[in-house]
Image 1 (spheres, one colour):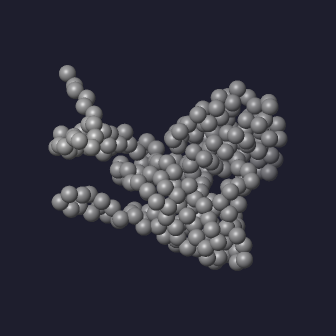
Image 2 (image 1 turned 90 degrees about the horizontal axis):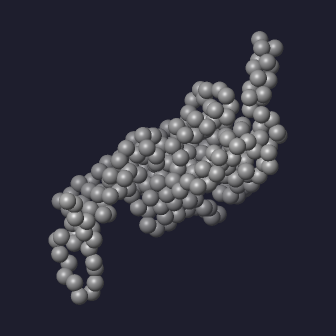
Image 3 (image 1 turned 30 degrees about the vertical axis):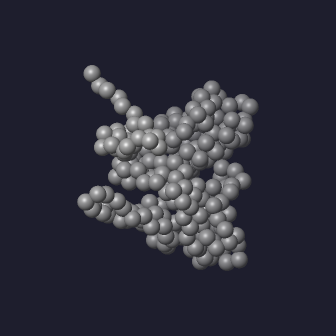
Length: 259
């Protein structure tokens, strides 16, 4: 028999060891079990906004080595126009172990180095022209990959089982635009509805399976950008009323003519 006990905290009660143990079980241990096997990345929140001088990371939860880290207050980092790609990232220190705590220091910084080192977690990238305004809102799905003056969150890792994936916000933006098409296939409709019903980032395997089935071709690479690029291709074909299978045949015919 297993006894499940929930501590009750009231003003008149004495805080006992058993109550703290129960609190630990339903707090720390629950999340350790739930996120076991998850890759490093954003779990929820951490939405980005901008001011004239700074990029602001709003509260959220991060997963690093199967442990959750809470960003309780907005964090900001100042930026400037450099006309080159800049990367905004979190940098996790190694674990700091004391008698009572296991902790990490998390720093928010901007760098021009695109390669992520151990402990790095990208949040966005941008290329800002002098005199331009850095924006964080998008006109449509393709606008998320605009080269200049726009926060690009495509490359940011989101926590999922086994390996990180692309932002749910990006995939849901795809689904919303797809569903505006009145002649959407049942396959596309079911996928898009499933996406809109998600509360956490979708695993890469599910996204890749949809893309390959939809385009009737195997993806050569499966980075976040490859997923975004193929979703953009599907969206473009859908908007223009083209069937992906027919489009693939035409592309193959065109390739044969070129050869």
